[in-house]
Length: 323
Image 1 (tube, one colour):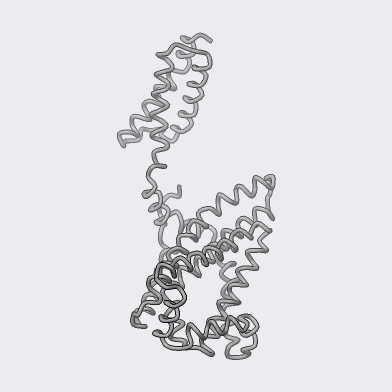
Image 2 (cartoon, helix red, strand yellow):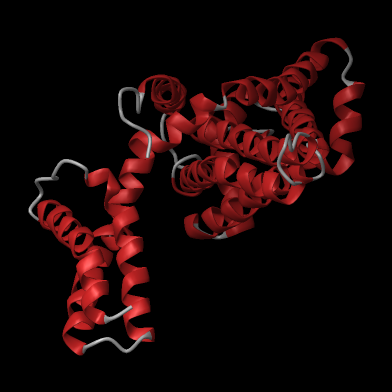
């Protein structure tokens, strides 16, 4: 095909792409703007073909300029990291959680039933808690929560040295737990189920033992502020792990590898959100939970955290078109 025939055949498409790009650059999208990505890909193919056939430089420069403008327009969102992060926090994350509401309730049941069961065992049969925590676990609970808040703060300062070191320890611990819950979901959901139940038992046993043998006020005032971020983040990580596991268990008509890849796309917003919640929980644990703040204020912050999370997941992102 001669350069003239090639240009005559494709010129209308280039003019249309130029019109769509110009409108988008001015912030006034033209009709048919949804076709811009397809037309951009076609222009890229035309540019590659023109270069391969060594068409005149003027034609190649025209196509190259058009492709550069299209690239800057389509991929400029990658440079808006903060804008994308805010959009995800305001709409994308709560939408992703609501979309997987069945997994939310399943993971909640897997965690909360063992949690409250172990808490209740403190009133009926403390041996269950003793078996779950062991001698070292009970001794650690008594050292941290056996006395009043002053003893707890002193113990934490001796163990970690500074607020920042507490933050570093807790973010390492929390990320490790969430990663276990998420990554083990690839074993056909079995790993995620195990770790959700296990953490429900351990945390419920700790809460039950604090009520039974320690100072409950010291324990609950410490965990109140970060509890909603940490525990809900754990459940969201479980949702991501279960979605990966379902990609293994139920590939449908897709090859199993493709099914897992598609499941990963759905799980990605969930694990991003869980990571953010875990980081916020660690900030609270390191810089707030062990501070000498009146107990009523700590409880108030904790209750506000749970109320805000319920409102966030139920309300945020409604009416906003999913990306």
